[in-house]
Length: 515
Ligand code: AHR
Image (cartoon, rainbow, N blue to C red; front, side, top):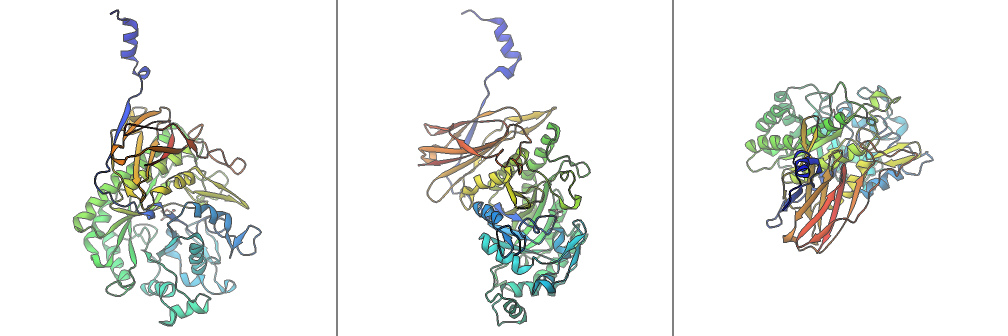
């Protein structure tokens, strides 16, 4: 045989020329996996910037189509996402909020200054009734975040009675009935403060643990017969000491979940723009996003040391990308555009949550409308769906489905000598036996060939959708709202128990495979 030496040398030295390696993925369908709680796909609406006013709520007199002041285009968009829960009224705002300011006739409600977010006037025209009725309209579960920083245990106990107790049992539910709502609402999720280590009171972990015990004591009776889910204000990113002190000091009969907040911020003093960013900034955002896996595993390991029966769940009740505000907008309003980078961030993070569904039972992207990594942006009567919105819609089949654990070695996305895993995958199976696979390739340039071993699932047909864009900062605008939209993906093939496809650079694919 004649060997072509120059060609051989070229192939040996320039491995870029070699065909890409196939990523072999093992899909474990043999043992029953945990259920992926739909609450992992939760949202957050704070009195911040144009989240509530102009975003969710435009008032009954607005020309924008609304129900009791809540804009219907936003409601319909969020209904399509099947949003499972909505956290309100903050965030930092929650620890300055006195709920009694937001009930009764709107003209009688006091105005306050929103001291956390831009020092703007808050006229309390959107209050408890407005929020809980809106949740019914959205068909979603409310998550109320209580004021611990500047409130009282009495105020929290009153809010619980006002919202959830039958009329005729005490003065608070009677007041609710007088204000036009006879039937209680169903409010299961209660946050006992927010970021108590920071805007929620600058407390030490030991002090907050004691404060938490006090507040939680008055949420329900001794047996928590109201079956409330009481959520302790959790750590920021790597603050493992916070989790440890809380888990050690809070009796397990007073707590159902502990929170964790992690934002994918490059540098708090140089966050970078939401569009027109460099690849270095893209890479750094992805590094911060992928850190979520390590954060969950380390916080959960600490929780498990103090809770052998794993009764306390982890709720990642704030997560997402955080960049500089759009030029010309109020810095206190946190209004930012949303690009393919955010789609990568959302797809990879949701895969991490799915793959840790045994302990992560809720997560809330920050925030739903017009703030940070929003799924919906509005401008007067116009509304657009962001790339992050499309990821949430594509991932809806994972809600309450059985996790199918996957194992594989990811190829690397390398930038200036640093590497990250390029591919992330999660898989689930619904009650009909239909399997869904979500695959993310964060690599800025290289596609990857993937082969999933699905022999145990007896699948025969596959279809899918893909979301990608011309560039990492491709995004939708009010003038061109359809620039980044999912399209059908027809290039996956099922052969001999193997599901094969090529995942293009910076794309998210969700496949649906039936028997
Ligand atoms: O989501 C914006 C803010 O970020 C929240 O109010 C606060 O909890 C966090 O620091």
